[in-house]
Length: 280
Ligand SMILES: [Zn+2]
Image 1 (cartoon, rainbow, N blue to C red):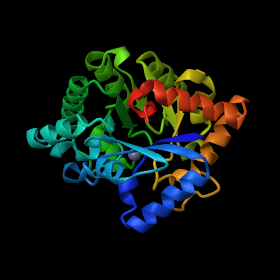
Image 2 (cartoon, rainbow, N blue to C red):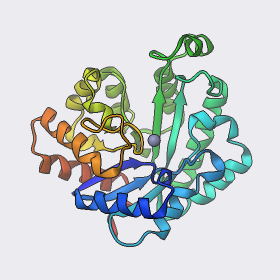
Image 3 (tube, protein in one colour):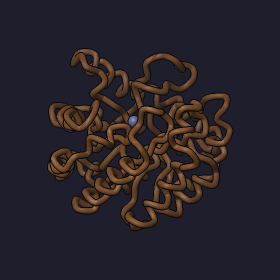
């Protein structure tokens, strides 16, 4: 059995389509999905939890809630209060995805992103739940984005804020980990799990693959980030939770373990980080 630790299930807007997506996931051995509750912004961040609540049967669905860094300018006191209310629900097991994104020129400025991130870490502390981190640097961004964000480095800023505001024991996930070995090591030291997505299978991802081999077995997870970022051989197509098997298979091969051992380890890790998901 596998767990997709990060999927945007609210992106499958047609209920019949979602039903088929979930059925295909189950057929591929996906038994649990963490539905990410960021919506298109704060006014739709409840959608993932609504899907989790409406869904009966398998795979099991849990939710998160959070305000994505691209929407950081909309993290008003009202939106944060809404978020805190949703975060208190037993089926909401994490806060996220939250963090910093200096990749797109249209993103809120650094100070706005940092403030929203810090405010959401405070909510997570209040409800005692782990955080799901989104971190994207401007290294590969267009010139305009580089000009806007200057020398600011999203990873340095992120790890600095975690050191200041997020005690190591509180835990969390580096979602779609795409950093370097060094950033991976520092994330592990900060108490985070590294979750690998479809880009692990892409030709240019040597750095991510190195980190995926380096990470200890008790700190790895797999995810789709569906409907985005489909793994090879589906790259460019719409992604869905069933396709997590390709990322998991590649990760097992890299680490020299069987697919079964990888599935067991990632399932155990997910249950340790999100104990509420193991009581069903
Ligand atoms: Zn995501």
